[in-house]
Amino acid sequence: MASASQIALVRHGQTEWSLNGRHTGRTDVSLTDQGREEARTAAALVQALEIDHVRTSPLARARETCELLNLSQPVTIDADLMEWDYGIYEGITTVEIRETVPTWTVWSQPCLNGETAADVAARVDRVIVTARASEGTTLIVAHGHVLRVLAARWLGLDPGAGRYFRLDTATVSLLGWERETPVILRWNTRGA
Image (cartoon, rainbow, N blue to C red; front, side, top):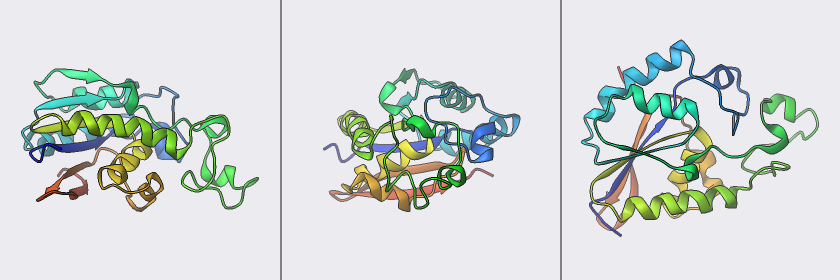
């Protein structure tokens, strides 16, 4: 553990699918004009953090958000930061899924032909190991559910605990330490 390490999280800006509540895992959708503006607004918050390392999901919505943050550091594209693979639920809403599985949530029911919470946790655990081995602040630009699992795992919680961490588009969060205990220093902060 490198106690000087921190992780800053930025969820990508709004997309047409996030606006409509459609599960957007591996489908490579672009930001809306509003999403681009959200990313530009988040830039001041991110730049105030003195970022040392930058990692982003390979999906276009995350990469474009990262570009709009206007950072000078080199960016590492990291496939471990891709969004949860929703399988047969890709592109549909929770309301539509609940027409056939009334109590479904991504946290409590499987995504048929997709990933489990444990699969996502294994990916983000690798990201956390890399960030903790690095001095300074690692910025991660990715997606809502994968970042929520990452926060849970940073705290040493079960990946399903990510359900407790609402994360809006283009918000900034900060994971760090209180002495030797991993903590959330800031969560779901929107730029002005």
